[in-house]
Amino acid sequence: AWSTGEPGIIFIDKMNADNPTPLIGQIESTNPCGEVPLLSYEACNLGSINLSRFVDGNTINWDKLAEVTRLAIHFLDNVITINNYPLPKIAEMVTSNRKIGLGVMGWADMLMMMEIPYNSEEGTKLASQVMEFIDYHSKVKSIELATKRGSFNNFKGSIYDNQNWLYNKYKGKSAGLITDDMWADLDRQIKEKGLRNSTTTCIAPTGTISMIASASGGVEPLFGLVFLRLIMDKTPMLEVNPIFKDYMVKH
Image 1 (cartoon, rainbow, N blue to C red):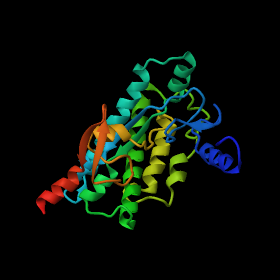
Image 2: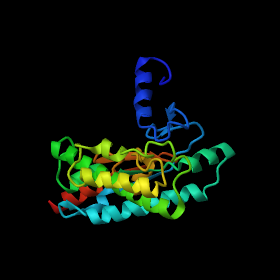
Image 3: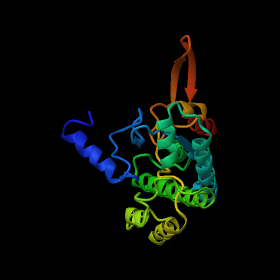
């Protein structure tokens, strides 16, 4: 249990080190899948980008990824506004902090398409580049939304209020595409224009939606290239990874 025992206390302390609204309360748990640390009465609002759709030859179409990232952030912020909440307290917390979580699926597929081993240093470096890139453009869009719609209500006293939070987070750790100066510039823009969402990214397991999209789940490796799935009344469905199938047909 996270609330008892030394390992759980350490885990909670690490989560609260990145708690975007510490004045509102301490994080004590996550959503059921574990990817979103939440305060009491908050709800998770998630979306996932299928990375396999951004491979162009043996490279990534970064312009397209930036465009889709910003579009997805806009969409998720709209969901907060239009959603009906079961309790007034939930509505208050969600609309005051406006947490959203844009993540990815199809990561293993992307690596296969680019012929990069999942457990390689090159793969690890690319993972850092992709997620730093998505985080950066998610914040760019959240700043843009703040100029039109206002910052989240609990912005004052948050980690973004009068602090160089993003610069300090990424300083010296850049994966190459986004520079320290670019993060510092975002901090300056946040001070001037605010931020619409207290969080913008997270990575969910995407168990069901990745199946619907014929994509690998989340950032996990493939557990099987070909397997049999039993659904409904034990109807068998043969699942064949489409990238593997195309490769086998070609060769």
